Length: 341
Ligand code: NAD
Ligand code: UD1
Image (cartoon, rainbow, N blue to C red; front, side, top):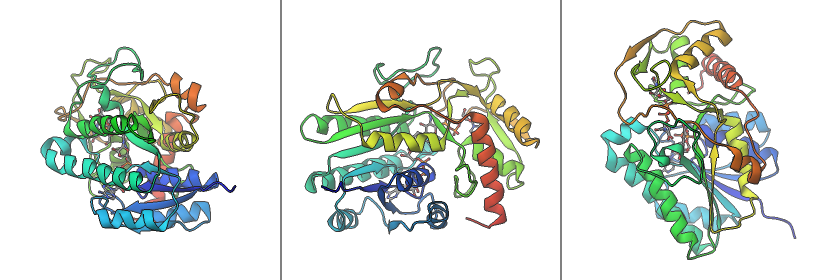
């Protein structure tokens, strides 16, 4: 029997989705890509083809549109889904909670309805370290910890998504994997694919690259009075291609339970100020920054215990934070030279 390798990738033109598509194609899968371009652009499809040498099947539409979503399941024999599509800006979610609950949860509910109807049981769900609800992790966070109260409506949408999937898995053949990302950064090592924020970036590394490229006046470091060694927030930054590879591993995971959960990080925390200093050291470019007030929804320090992914997915981060910074900077320059927007 020939294994069906069609995988639906929702949010596939976004930052992590696009890098995952490259890995899927390289390992012989056929990604079926869906996106509504609410936070990405059609130019990413061209960049993926440039790297892989293959054309992707792509559908533009909103997952909240049930008819649109069902039409994809009707056309393809899907063997699994990687679900990236969601809004992801923590501070914006504090300002516009309904916008986040509507998009992130309605999209997931519609997707699960189609998966049930068309008997597709495998789903990899983009979750986040924010579900631990921890403000300051003095020890690395492990999957065995119970989830807590996330700090933002965005975080609650991930918490609720996991809960919904776990409940359904207990009553059906659905076998979800939750990948709890820490902080994905960087770009494809070719420099031809990377994050393409629409408007001012919310995430820190694209803000740094755009500042150094002259697109932004200065980086504001949000808060310098956190309970961390230099007063700025500490996060576990992980290269996006490592994150992408974990999704492909997750597709062939053997389950011992109804669902499974894995942290994706490096196990090492880096402060915002350290990230700025590393950028300056690696690229030789000064970063113009100032300190500003804390950003709503931010927490002091988070970093991962990654031993479970190593043991059960045979996965660990292969690239360093230095690689990620260099690749992100390469991409920023490439995209400006080639006018990619
Ligand atoms: P992204 O915004 O770059 O990609 C998400 C994509 O989903 C975008 O292209 C957007 O246009 C699309 N989308 C959103 N709502 C949609 C809808 N209703 N219908 C169709 N398409 C829709 O984000 P990303 O950084 O690639 O993140 C991917 C996933 O990982 C998200 O679920 C995010 O919450 C989660 N996550 C991201 C991070 C991070 O730091 N980047 C950390 C933890 C978890
Ligand atoms: C957050 C979420 C994560 C979510 C991700 C997607 C938490 C703990 N994590 O990551 O779940 O999926 O966003 O967007 O909530 N910073 C600045 N200046 C800037 C931008 C950021 O100082 O202009 C700082 C932030 O205060 C933070 C760090 O840089 O301390 C990283 O921020 P960011 O890249 O936005 O990621 P998180 O907020 O950690």
